[in-house]
Image (tube, rainbow, N blue to C red):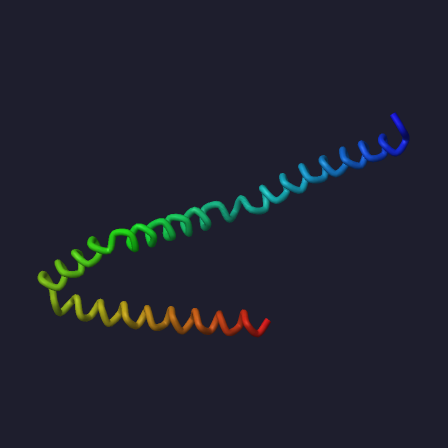
Length: 100
């Protein structure tokens, strides 16, 4: 085997060991993110289900309107306020990203 080939093999081995070490370190560092990311995945899956099955939330809304209309109007006001705040926050964050 030539000297150049041995050097390349040694370099490849060092790089593979380094990659394995870095992957292990990254796994340790990201372990604390496992639960928040799992929760975010659940929220995303739930949102996807709601978008695919809009009849169920609408049926629940109709049932709430029949059962307790005054309470429904109060919660709709709270929901509308939360929705507006979320939209404002989204716009604000979007403007900050564009500035960078």
